[in-house]
Every structure is written in C-alpha cells, then in structure tokens.
Amino acid sequence: MSKDKAPRRPRAETPKGFRDYFGADVTERKAMLDAIAEVYHRYGFDPLETSAVETVEALGKFLPDVDRPNEGVFGWKDEEGDWLALRYDLTAPLARVAAQFRNDLPSPYRRYAMGPVWRNEKPGPGRFRQFYQCDADTVGAPTVAADAEMCALLSDALEHVGIERGDYIVRVNNRKVLNGVMEVAGVLDPFDPERFSDERGIVMRAIDKIDRLGDAGVRALLGEGRRDESGDFTKGAGLSGEQADVVMGFMAAKRDSGAATTARLRELVGASAIGLEGVQELEIISELLAAQGYGPDRIVIDPSVVRGLGYYTGPVFEAELTFEILDEKGRKRSFGSVAGGGRYDDLVKRFTGQSVPATGVSIGVDRLLAALRAKGRSGAAAPGPVVVTVMDRDRMADYMGIVGELRAAGIRAEVYFGNPKNFGNQLKYADKRASPVAIIQGADEAARGVVQVKDLVLGAKIAAAASVEEWKAQPAQTEVARADLVAAVRRILEG
Image (tube, rainbow, N blue to C red):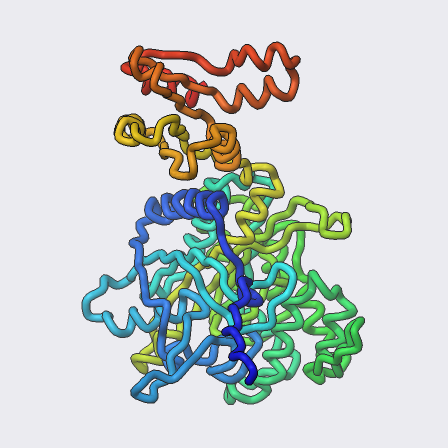
C-alpha cells in the first residue's frame, strides 16, 4: 500500500509582475509622497482616499490601448453577480466620487490622491502590474487657467522632491489642436465624431511613441503598419502619404518660442474650428504661466505630446526628465517621462449625463524615485535603530527600561530578541540592521550604574583602516553614566 503523498508546499515567490517593498523603499517613497503632498496642499488641494475596488462599469473602457472594459484590469464577480475590479488609476474613482457626492462637494472640487493601482497587463523589465500614483485634479473648472495651474503645480512638485531646474521640462499640447490637424488630414468628421475613431486611436498611439520609434516608425504606423525586430506586426491607421505628411508636420511644429510654435499650429489647423480653439487655449496657458514666472526653461508648448488615454479632451501635459542615465547595456539614454495629465471634460458625464469639466495630473511615483536615485539624491541607506544588547537573560526588564527611555526621547531603538548566548551574533544583527549605536550593559556595568555605548559607524571605519592593536582598544566604545545614556546616544546620532 503506497503512502499518502505529503501536501505540496507553496512556492515562496512574488507573483509575476509584482514586487515586495522593503524598509528603505517604503521610507523613501513616504518621504517623497509627503513632499509632493506638501506642494499639493499649498495649492489648495484636499486629500481623498477611495476604495481600491470599483465596479467595472464605473471604471469604464478608458484603459490604455484596450477596447474592452474588462480587459487590462483584475476583475471578478461578487456574490450578487456584479463585476468588480481593482482600480487601474486614480482618475476613474474620482469621476465616480464627483458624481456620487456632487451635491456635497464644493465646485470646483480640488483633490489629491496617492496610492497603488493595478494593471492586468503583460509584465516586463521595469513594467509592473502594481505601482504607485500621485494625482491632483480639479473638477468643475472649465477655464484653462486650471490647466495652467496643473503645469505649474507639476513643475513645483518636481523641484520640491529634488529634481533641479534644467533636469526636467513640462511639455504642453492640446488634443483640440490634434483634432484640428486630423480634420485637415481627413480622419475626423466634425459632424460624425465616431467616424474614423479607430484610425484616430492608432494615430494618437503612434504619435505617443515618437521618442521610441522615431519618424520612420511613426510614419509606418500612420500608413499600413509596422513590423518590429521580433517580427510582430502592428496594424497601421491606413493614412495616405499626403495625410501622413499633415500629421508628421504637426509633430514637427515645435519652434524656438511658444509664440512661434502656436503660430505654426495655426497654419496647420487651417479653418478647423476645434483646431483654432485649441491653439487659442495654448496661447492663454502660455500667457498665464509667464505671468507666474514659469518660462521655457520649465514649461514649453510641444505638439509631440498627445498622451495615450482616450478620455483627454483638451490641454495635455507631460513631465520629462532630460538628464542622461546608463541603461542595462551601458548605453546613454534620457530618463524620460515621470508624470502626465490633461483635461477630461467627459469622464464625469458618464455618470451624470451632464458635462462636468475636469483636469488633472498624475506622477509616477516609482519612476520618480528611480530618477532621484539615478541622480544620487535618494537611495542612501537609512540608519537603523539603536540596538540594546542583552548580556543577562534575567535582566530583560532592565533592557526594556533602557529602550523605553530612548524611545521616549524620540530615538528609534529596539532590544535584541534573538538568542543572547553569542554576543558576536548580536553585533552582527546590529550590523545587518544598519544600526548606528549598540548599548551594552552587563552585571558589572549595572552594579556601577553605567552603560557601554558603542559607535558602530565609527567602529566600522576603524576596523577598515586601523591595526589590530588599535581595534582591540575599541576607541569607538565609551562608558557613560546610566543617567547620561540619552545624551550620549544623541551626540553620536547628531554627529
């Protein structure tokens, strides 16, 4: 008779496309979010936390590059048969909140939100299924002054977290201008907005890839399609050569100044009413930003910005980091985009049936953290807690009294809870915790009313450079009166 097989043990591995965040990652992210929240608060925005779960109906079909509402999300049916899903961004939940609580909220409603979002997409290098976003939005303001404010807010937020002026640029465009260009190119019918919608979607996604694919790659997508290096074929918009020339001219419309760029855009949109309206809005945004001191060293008009999401209806903006980094193959490349947003006047309308103007910006937290690390402005190892070592098991109350006193003084500290038999293991533990200080008190020190305070940072430096005799002298360890413990530890930490 065969023995029953032991139950299979689960694999200890992170699901594909997800990752774990450890101490330093969490600490750095919180510090950055706090800095961004400070800027958002200064601009008058209030915090909002929405549920991580929304109905699929509320999320709608506005996911990037997908057509079906249940594709690209992590969804399931509840016990009542309703489809639910993890939120894929922080904007769709805001639209639901703005509609649900429209009689209670001020208008305009200015809110910011921070938290994880989930995308059920194919993961890849640097592309995860869960990531953090940090958004600010104004709902109920039809004026493009609200869009100009978003650009200013984004600029201030980047500088406040440590991205220096000159290392970034906020680029601004307007979907209405692009619509005007598409009208001139013959892929937008102002009397039938749904006509040519598939072609327009392909055109917008193609323009959005100009930095990665270059002119030739985008032109191929505007035409019959493009085959990449792996052999995969992407269907194109089917534009003729003349139509593609109009779109390519739009992307090349940027000039040395905002005024020259908008003048060129006026030429491109011709008599298109929607196109001319978009150009005028860009001119107003430029004027409002200039009045606040945001010049072309920080914010510029750039027709190549279109943003991939289909719900944008007016001005769109994107923050790009301009400094170079080395990729995994040692090649230099620009860091790229870390934030974006725009106007979406029809999103709340899905719930209310009435047009509700809205504009907002979203910062990619993980990419911005990576940028700060690349510039050496983040990623330094955070100091661990002071470790109170245990010399005598039966004196645990004394050690807890020491750690309690340190904590009451605002000093991060912990007692070693492992096996205290081997004192060397306690110091190894403190080293693994990146502890700056270890507290040592045996029975002899306790009887004399003193403690040993060991500067682990200085000790490590001496160990790396000093002779064995110097190390044995342990100049990094000093004996202080028990009553002076907090002051002695604070001196080391401050030093």
